Length: 324
Image (cartoon, rainbow, N blue to C red; front, side):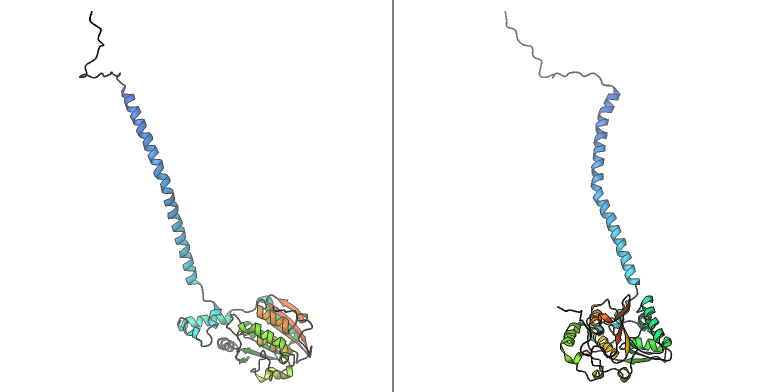
């Protein structure tokens, strides 16, 4: 009997398993479902990548708007009055300053001349004192628009202003021709205040001696003032000049020292110092006008009452300023 041979299908006709015919719905759903799933997934990824770009664009717009506001504000802001006085005298720094039209210079001078120096309460302290003393002898270092009212308050008395800024002098004389204003020059910049205070403490020439003020060898003594300043016995002295607004600008060291000397030449003199929030004004007021003589204050204005012929050996009973 012949052996059994396994049955093989012909290689020419491969075995194909027939599949049952699928319904049109099944043929449509499966591929289409996968296609839409892929589409949804591919839509999310680009959206996330766009977020940094959107943030960058919004931030750039905000920065540009901020720069526009800053530029507009700075261009429309008026010039600072203090900058005008920095070039009141010829100097290399002033030669390098940009030129302005005559109209703009007049505007700056007007702003500077009309800018109030004292607050309302500070001026009330000063004007009330002058009213109580009037008619009296009133000496003022500095010319401000508010101070011109003191001449009318002190009607019948003597009022003299000492000023180094020619623009302020011109503005004051335009408003009041009868006001006595003297042009003076200050030679000492504010940056020398420390050395001058050391000099005053060590030099016997700086001790209180009003009779020798014009011939004093003390470096703080102002010896180029009008002769009336040394001859009149003053009832009220105000120190609000020179400006002292920068280290190179003239400081008020000599004005405060000289005010303290001429105050001791009279019977009783009230000395008022403005801008005592600044170091020089505070130091020299304490040193030469003395804390024990402080009788009133308002804002940045201190009022001292100096007895005549007081402390011939020294200015204060206790020097409270200590420089290390």
